[in-house]
Image (cartoon, rainbow, N blue to C red; front, side, top):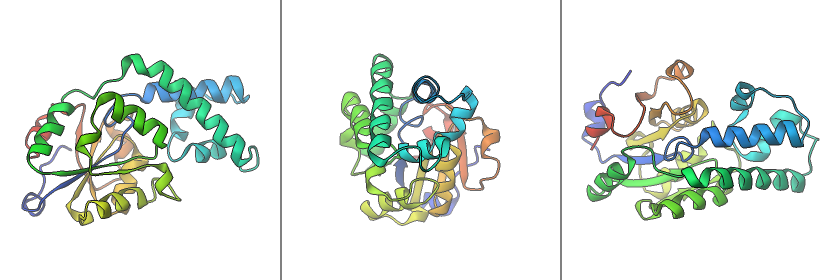
Length: 228
């Protein structure tokens, strides 16, 4: 796709909303591995890698409910298993933690140009803080929306609408950076355009969405170079 932003958007002051996992950091392999081990070895499921990937959206308790049913865990048990999964993920991913190629320069350029930026993630604060603080990038964001800020996660639009509201931006002026189909759907539901990072899903997984401006492998893509 990789088509240019239309003139209407170019003439407005753009606002950027970033998903975290697979969009700022290329860590979805580590999340999938942690979930699969928890599902199969700890909780007795028998899910393939691809089956696990299909369930990895929204809040952790929502993931557990989709896989095991509504009555399998109490709220406290779901929270405990969720935190155990995240502890395992962080321990294994920490030695590999890095921004996606070109993103550091993109953040600097956007910040210098006065572009407002926010995080809009379904991750819990524990994981958001892990990335932002270890990478020292919290300074770029004027708002941070996490799983704790919404009742219903993506593809519901609240994550991105709250981000836009916090930045005092209109939805049509926002560009969402996402890596997952449900995230792009959430952006569409919020009335926002999206740029897709192909870190976790191929283009074919996004064919049903008409709000995608571009598909990029990283932030050194020519589309990104001309965005601001």
